[in-house]
Amino acid sequence: MLFAAQIATAHKALANLDLAIIGVYFLIVFGIGFYFSRRERTSEEYFLAGRNVGWFFIGASLFVSNISTEHFIGLSGTGASSGLAVGHFEWLACLILLILGWVFVPFYLRSNVFTMPQFLERRFSRQCAVYLAGISIIAYIFTKISVQLYAASVVLERVAGWSLWKTAIVLVIATGIYTIAGGLAAVIYTDTVQTLILITGAVALTIIGLHRVGGFAHLQTMVPASYFHMMKPASDPAFPWTGIFFGAPILGIWYWCTDQVIVQRVLSARDEGHAKAGTIFAGFLKILPVFMLVLPGIIAYALFKDQVSAKPDYAYPTLVLNLLPTGLVGLVMAALLAAVMGAMSSVFNSASTLVTLDFYKKINPSASEKQLVNFGRVATGGMVLLGLLWVPFIHLLSAQLYIYLQSVQAYISPPIAACFVFGILWPRLNGQGAISSLLVGFVLGAVRFVLEVLDKSAHYQSGAIRWIVDMNFLHYAIFMFVVCTIVLVAVSLMYPAPDRKKLAGLTFATVDDKMETIDATARPQMAKETGLEHAMNVVFTLALIATVVGLWIRFR
Image 1 (cartoon, rainbow, N blue to C red):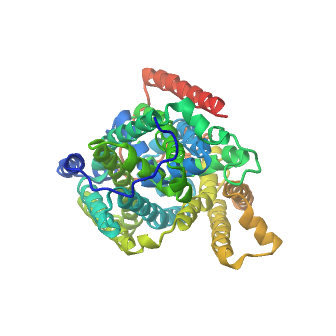
Image 2 (cartoon, rainbow, N blue to C red; image 1 turned 180 degrees about the horizontal axis):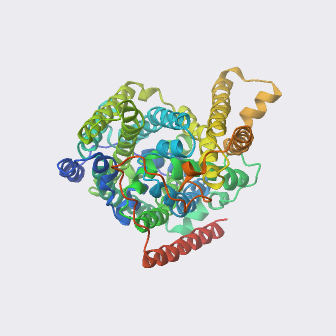
Image 3 (cartoon, helix red, strand yellow; image 1 turned 135 degrees about the horizontal axis):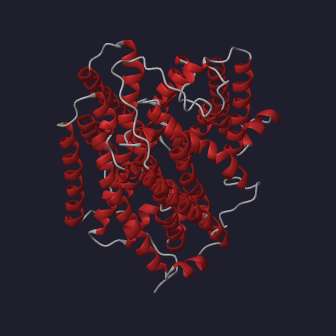
């Protein structure tokens, strides 16, 4: 067997079998979408899938809503250039998902909210809800949709030679059709199919890649030793251990515990036990990307060092082109399509939920269930159009700008995380403190982002500016979180404490207080987990924690 660096194929036409596999994938996805389009009747059914979804489907949907083509590109590319260290974010997510299930979910379910801004409004004020809804929608448009289309175009153009803009249009329209038609139920159940396809395709490529390099042990001899050591010193420019264990959880709490795209899946659970179990199952699934996405990047570096060193983003497509036989290429292509369509459908549906329930319903409170569903479909269509408007600009997204867009999340998450975390911990905090914290955080994040972009051409010499720009983005997230927390507490203490009755069920101190019901048609609260569900959730939670800690020790 030849282990030396090899010459990579540029791209190749897909065989009929590969195209047939991709065609079957599209038929399944559209079939599920239109099946649920005939069932949706109320806003609860359209936006929360009737609140009757089981743990397996919730966990699968959480996973595929998170994993998109930017993971295939980003994780494998970073794996090719620096090794397993980027996998910290994946394994930390396993633990953050447990925080979602055990800490946040009970509050969300008891408050019977549809959206995260609604929860923030009940806990703090309408101003906070408007800020969160607005910043979320803007972030979805300018980071999630654009980045997903950029990453998908890199893969599909590289592997199959498909035209960038034609591919993007097909993906956006195809995703929009089943999302508009079927609502969250269609998204969740297609996500389950997409999860199975994604894992099967990615694992197949990893196994074939390991076989090609002569096994895991031999792979370790073909790349720098540092590639398989995840714990980096605090001075490391990319993955300092201080940033990983103190900064990354701040991003994680915002993304996994307060972002509409993620939490909306948990809110659709049939009871509290299934909601928790879904987050635990998703936690186990999040162990996989290190081995099915980061590891293939290292394999690509070992096999095609010259090509991959020049363009790390091409690591995953290079493996697909050069290692997979006919049939498996179609399966992995279907997995890539599943990743981008699953993630985009989640964004489309969640953004339309925010627009409909946090803006339209406030403006038109007497809107009927049918009007809400119809407006939700129109809002989803609007997100699809915004996705299409991105298509002409995709070619302008360089790898460097891709990194910028990813870092945006680090600059908007700290104030939101602070408000949610301390909001449920301390009932003394009020709306004035929360909105002040959110706005201060927005300014701090915007300053860092603008200076970081301008520094590429201006090359600032000022010590203060250099301190802001040169700080690792995870360390800056810690700095923002501390400042926003201080503002949250200080301003809250300057104003009267909120009425305890209004905080019923929204903080640990008031968790058992009876909630006031304003809406006569309000839904009954979701059933709590049974004794058996609780025992099973505890056992699997401990198993997940032990697995993640064991992996960290193994690859420290």
